Image (cartoon, rainbow, N blue to C red; front, top):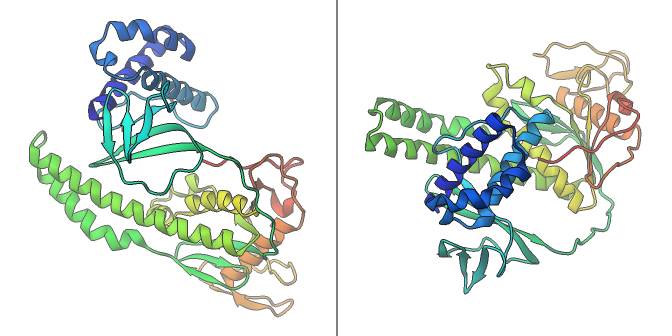
Length: 365
């Protein structure tokens, strides 16, 4: 499997260079792959459909670039290409499961531990290398089971750094601050790595240890994001988030680590698909002014960032600043009933629901 990844990485770089030099396309490179495979003994040791998937990966990378969603595709150095895909299963495809083992064409049978029983028809299999661990991500096709809408309340969510979130019903979710718990270990391993001589075996061992520490932190963040999103999707029918520009906010180096550690974007994305499965929806609204407006009378009450209590001199409402913002977020999301334009339940709306004439579905990553 390691040799297959290395062969795919070299092929990816060759195809990228061919596109830059000769301006070829995905289908032209795919047609020329047979001749390229005949003249290269390493390519002949890899399943043909796995090699074809490399050309389609490069095509997707260029499509994302021309669509303004990503940077120009870059050459992959060693360690930056860590997966390969079998696009078909069965006899014609390259993978199948036999007696509890994963059979990969041109590789062999691999012992595996099933995360859960496979339901439906297997379509694709992506083998992923994560430092010293290997995962097989199998996509299946099965009938869609539509959930029956249930009477669940709506909620507005005000995301923060000190507190992870304040909900419009008064619930406060504490920030996990997972980076702080792992910071000392990561710093120790990073200093140990910097002292090792480049190219030595000890440096490679130190690099693996550092990678494992970051993986533990990543798994903890994923666990928090999944648990929090399940809480939102299970208890609320409509969840309204702020449409925060997270990519721009992390350019502030004083808050970047805290924002990334809070997993705002991942929690929002996971809540979207989980809410869809439960016949719910997620709405994104403009965040401007949500902390300054009074959720009771709508008047603007200017407050400094250090003021954590909202006290309205007009209507006398007094409550937590973040809860007040969450109520404003909920009001903006529900003031105008959005019309969904696609199967995804996440809808972007302007301020007070008037941002655009035609709300667009928010594409899941």
